[in-house]
Length: 153
Length: 285
Image (cartoon, rainbow over all chains, first blue to last red; front, side):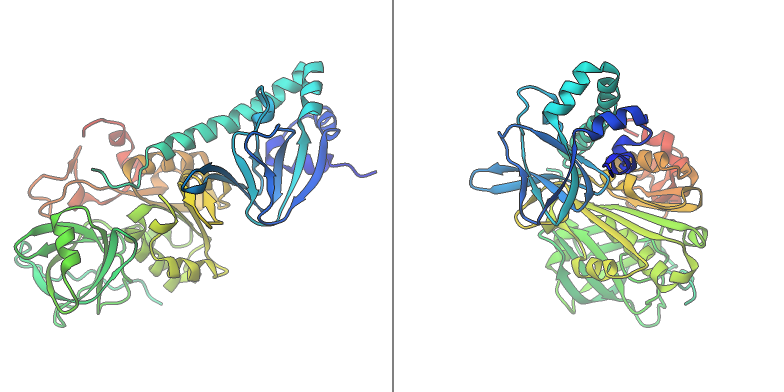
């Protein structure tokens, strides 16, 4: 039977991950598809999954009263959405909307957390990859905060 | 098509005398930016290189350096896009078709168009930084077969701050031009990328050893962009940035735009990153 392991192996997030770990992670993976305009998750919901995007684009939004939804980040092909599954209380902090037809691999959070508890080496490999993503996003957020293109007053 | 014609200054002697140019067209780009199309005097034969700037004089108000943002292959018009940030640019904005502005130029170093031939080209623009890069894009598209891949990464504050929207759409429709636009934040129906322009760089697919990068935007943005271009494998001597300092004379005499050992108006505004990398790390220079 074909599994998602080759697909996971091809995604940049899992690049060079050893096959034994990929095999463990594959057991928590499923293929998902979201039509344009549908939501992968909503703020405050339990973070059951994180998503490796294979095709399409996901926007992270926050709703501001009297202003409406504000997009603060998008993630596209080869990127990842979601780290709320890693940190208690495991709730989404933003809404995640598919801005176009989006195909992704969903990784089941409870499944992965329990495998990481059983095998700390797997957990370390995953966390190393997540820390790299978090570092990139923190740096990008800091640049966003500088509001570089605004007029100086 | 041949490269853009050799530079012909609008007035070479004396260099501090502006030449009156009639405004042929004026239009808003965004809420605080606008484009003026000026007619050079027919006898001047004005031409410029992509990346150069003019000193624009508003009579009785003052003079400012503004990058040329038009097509270097056209010698019948001088195009400037600028933001309203001070008395002179507000004065420029108030002028209408048929009015006159004074022009001195073109001045400064150009983008390395000759060096870029045969290479992939990555153009990274932030905010109004797209304006000084547009002549380079015109030039490459006019001689498209002489260059490798062409990639534009453009970041702005929000969707309403995007310059040259119709032109970006035309460029994106081409099969030989990879155009990516991102905004820092978006309210409303925006379906494009959201995030700072540096987030687009890891997705660029070029031959880094044979790539020329041209970068223009706020200085902090250029520093971070250069760091990410280096991570991509593009050598620092192949990354070019357009610097901005307080230029007054435009010809390297007054010293207002001193940047370490350089005068930005004369030795720049376009520098290789290798030449200014150390200087960018020095505060208050």
